Image 1: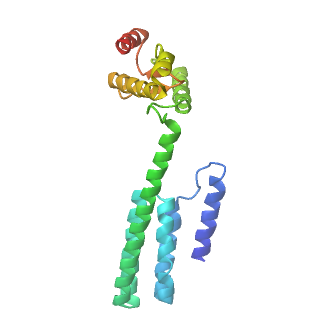
Image 2: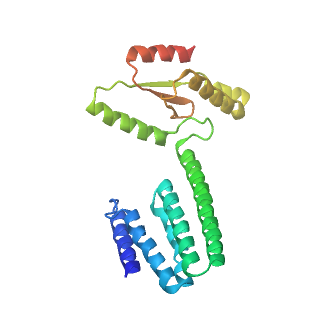
Image 3: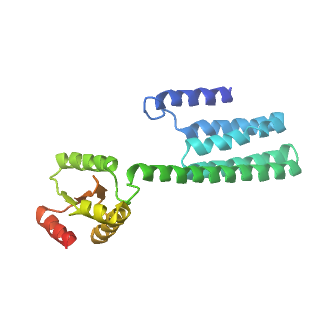
Amino acid sequence: VIVLFVAATLLANVRELRPGKKPPVPYVLVLLPGLGAMIVSIWQQGVYGVLWSYPLTLISYFVLTRRTALVFSLGVVVSVTISVGLWISVPLALRVFATLVLSAVMIIVVLNMLGELQASLLRQTLIDPLTGAYNRRYMDQVIGIAVEQGRRHTPTNTLLVFDIDHFKLVNDRYGHDAGDDVLRRVVQVVRARLRKVDPLFRIGGEEFMVLLRDTDAAGASSVAEDLRR
């Protein structure tokens, strides 16, 4: 009955997540009855109850925050080990403890790898691969947010747009590899003169844009002249 309750609750949460809503039941309140049912199953059914501990540990890392899942998985390890030691045998409890810890460690390793991969893919979608500056896609997002903030409060941001003079001449005379080096070097120089809060975007071949946060026109003119020099 408890297993069916957990399954039905998870299904209800999934139905809410599909249109983008929040799950109606917190997942920790779903997994706690599952933990209780597993302990009862170990008491009543022996080894068959132990088998539930592995999917329960796995599910927790996908529906809870990393910290909460770690605490929950430690609770599973401790409660299952004690239950098996009391009601089945101590040697089996040691084996269950070792395999549950190994399973949790492997889940964490895999999730870390997936997180690094996701971060790498996200960077690729937001950053110009040649120069390392942000691309137009990310610019649209940032400018959109700045515009919405400006509607609620007095806007204090300034856009600075610039390009590289005679860039076509560089490509024609020295080749595109030299032109690429110029683009990369320009980005390095500009970033060294900007604050970390001022994003730099590449919006065209040799055209760039900077969002100067909390900077008025006079301050932006000063920054522009500094960059030009």
